[in-house]
Image 1: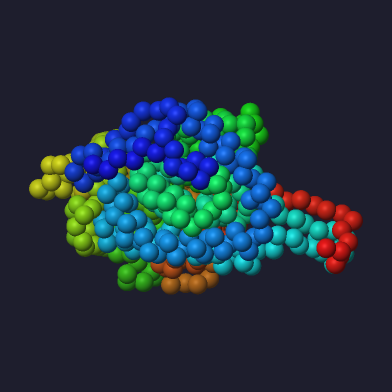
Image 2: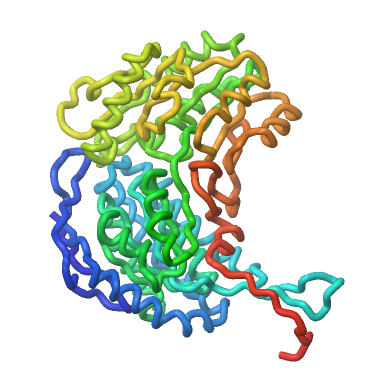
Length: 481
């Protein structure tokens, strides 16, 4: 079993000042795979103090020098890519091939994008031709506390870290205690890259402990949190007394609108996207809303596709899906599948229990429900597992109504061969992102939602700006520097 009991504070690996031991469980076997320490208030205070002390010097460091350190980090990340994939696969159950490509790959891609965006970012800008002596200056907010989840751990860490580095913020990271090994490995890379002491600090802990301490801390200027809507609300309340900025990337219940003129791969694409990462993605297309004229054949096709989705251990190579992250998540998904059955949805694939032949590990059967309504629990709640709900719509207006009839607003999807319809829907769907006909967002596109899916944006120039203050200056003398 891996033992990781140190924190990274002020450029050093240090023993916890206080805390308790937490065992990380391999979800493929249900056996402990690592032991870490969870920090206490003294550890949180030490990390924040280090970040606060380092902030003036880091803020004054020219952006080109900060970006050069990001480039050095990229070289190290690439060299240790396999280690990163192995850590993520072990601790949260992503199949090793997927961990290699998508999970570890996301971290590398985001860092690379921030290098590009950072080099192009205008930290000082003219207000406009009408005001030659006015300037807008972008400067870092200060100390950023970053609280990240287990489901796409390196994706979320690098989205926050890269933006904060370009902006000039110093950082304290609390990764999920369910998947801490990748974050500790990342801290090793940051240390090797030569970031100044105190710029990046890592304290392991849980939400009730270190997470709450960071969100209430008077010397933290911004909280950047990715996780559940419930936790996001709690963080917002905890942060209110200090009036710190709160950036939230929360849950989702994405609609995938399938029209009769959708391409022949649309249904398969939607089912496999839903099952990817064992359904543990906030932007998963969990509601397939289908035009009535093609509803029956869509249900039939979705059933056939889901039944072919293989489930297996994270350590095995292949295109299967792995387990969900832990027993709590497994039990929640099982309860929601049973609720779907009890409330009258038509189960057409999967169901309760583990896949046939599996009696150990947090494996969930790829599940599809048809004839779901928005009054049903599975039509409204985020399940965060490999469970797809299918419902019908009558016309375009009905499709928009059903898609928007949710408290979430992260990502919606449209499958249609009519470009004018696609453009209309892009404007009408109430979500931070809309993806058409299987085309993914490009590098640097902002990630984030509206309503109970959170606020702020991650990635690209928008991600950098989220870690910055805007200063208006009048009486500026051009060419005086």
